[in-house]
Image 1 (tube, helix red, strand yellow):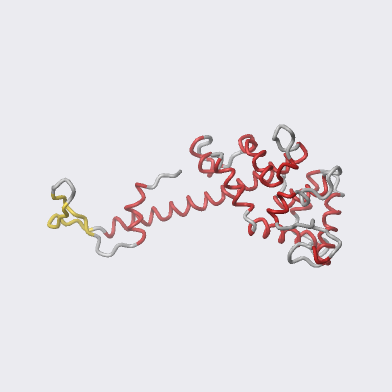
Image 2 (cartoon, helix red, strand yellow; image 1 turned 120 degrees about the vertical axis):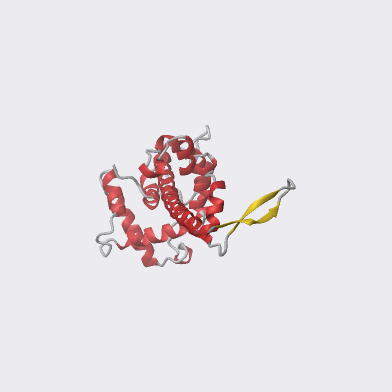
Length: 253
C-alpha cells in the first residue's frame, strides 16, 4: 500500500482536520521550526512565506483543494506523488519543491533523525540489535518506530498537539508515523551507500596492502618493552593502504 511522503503528510494536515483548519501552521512550535509565522495563505502579500508570490500561493491553494477532493487516502497519496500533468496542477510541484527545501534548510530532517538515533532506532542500531540484515532486505519498521511518535510530534508541533497524558493527539499520529518512516528510510539509504562505499574501500585497501608492503628484517624500531621488533616499511603509502591499517579497528556503532 502506498504511504505518504513528508510533504504530502503536511498537505494532509492542512486539509484533514475540520476542527482545526490550517494546522499545523498556526502552532507556535511549528512556526518557530518552519520560519512561516503568518500561515501559508495570508491575504496580505507581504506576509507570504519567503520566496512566494500571490501566484505561488494561489497555485498551491488550488492543489490543496484538488487534493482534499480525492475520495480515498490511496487516491490522495497517488495524487500528491504524481509528476504527471504538472502544467495542469502547477501547485503540486511548487509545493513539493518549496516544502522539501524548507525541511532540509530549517534542520527538521536532521532533528528528527537525531530523535530516532537517540532512541537507538536508527538503521545501524536496528541492524545490530533488532533485525539482522536490515540494510540489505529492508524492514517493516513501523512497530518499533511508533515508539518515537510522541517525541517527534511534540518536537514538531509542541503542546498544542498533545493530549493531557502527554501523547500526540490521535488525529496527528498516522501522519507523524509516515514522517518518521520516511525519515528512517532516508537514513537507511544513506547507510546502504556508506556500507557499499566501505566495502569498496576495503577491497582497495587489501589490494594495496598486498602490492605495497615491504618486510625488512634488517631494520628495527625501539618499543616500550625495551625489545627490538621487526619493522614493516611502506615505500609510498596510499590512502587505500592507510585504510588497510585502520580497518581492523573500525567497529560500527
